[in-house]
Image 1: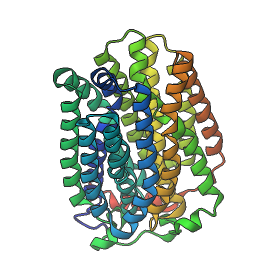
Image 2 (image 1 turned 180 degrees about the horizontal axis):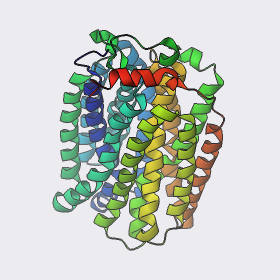
Image 3 (image 1 turned 180 degrees about the vertical axis):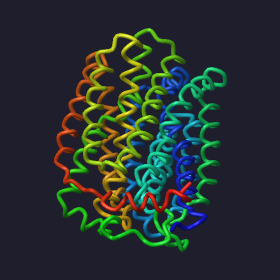
Image 4 (image 1 turned 90 degrees about the vertical axis):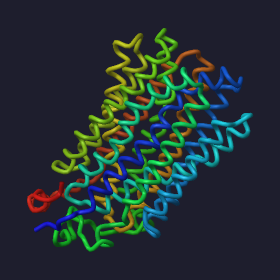
Length: 417
């Protein structure tokens, strides 16, 4: 028997909306850089450094917002983040000098951004067990849709109205949507008298997981394997998002067309999330996350040896597919191995550490470009990092939370949508 009026899919829709708008702004960064430099004379390397500080800060703070989500609930966390994120980008858009730009992008905006990915996905983990991978796939596909739609729109707006107007428009629109989406978040199904997946009874304990606290989870080898493999992958994951646009321009591609390379990452990411997420509900996460890391390594090599769009486009799509799969599986892995009760704190700690390393990759890549005059070495190193992540993923213990999932899915299928 299932519970009518299950709120979980409303939470998924709210997470999708929030993630779509926040990543629309972030993934458009590369389309703004050239115009910002041309208009202001600011150093591109310094802008990349500010972006690195932004990524580091919001990732590190995700450990805090994840714990706050467990303690205070996601609604207040996401709503506060909407206000701060909007303020930070508006400050950057109106900045008269690089120091004010740093205040907006490097200080205020990451405070708001930290209230998005971890709080949204940790909340989805709490609402689902049997269909956790499917629910996370739908929620996180908002980031892939942002990849697809936002960069070309941003590039067109910049050409038509200038980077300041384009960035302000993105920030205000995104802030309003994120604030509105916060209304639909609830801490967990139990807070509304419901159960995960809309079941009329709570799921069995061996399926739901033990509900380890973050400190206890950190004493397990599994926690450190998950942290290690995502640290290696996240270290380089933003390199294509930040540099593929300029890489394509250097090969003679027009700026607007170059922006579609980032969009092609989004196309692959959307496919990876929607394909691998539901598949992991049936076959488990370990095998699929290992395959995704291996595929990501291959994609980086393909990008690095590209001589034009013929290879660059499919390599970007493959990178997006594998990246979309791995990030979708991260909160699902946490829920599977450590349970729902403290998912925010545990996902936050892993994302806060691994995600903070993502700040390093694009900046180091820029330094490599400055010294060598080519992006290819940076992409090759990125492929090696993901190959190492693949090896770590193969060491994860087998965890079949699907032991009783077949019965749960049959019971919930009638009313889950």
